[in-house]
Length: 119
Image (cartoon, rainbow, N blue to C red; front, side):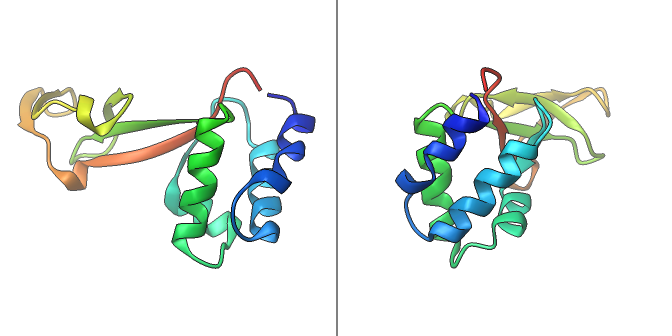
């Protein structure tokens, strides 16, 4: 997605317009393929509420600007595997860092976003 198209959707994003501008500016500067946790997007955007940011992210995912995915992380650090949604995450997964099968716990699951490759 081009910067022009990103800028064009600011008025159509829900919620606080200045937070929308900060989010779009941040995403336009992001290197292709860079992944972001919601905490980082919240820091960069400084929206009036977490709900405001959530609504913006939903809109950007629906418009194909952002890809949303779920990563299972090892307790030792590092991603084990990525999945399209939380319902696709298995109960047990092989932790390549520990070389053993582990039960997936909520604290090991993160929702991440990245700018769609076709920007």
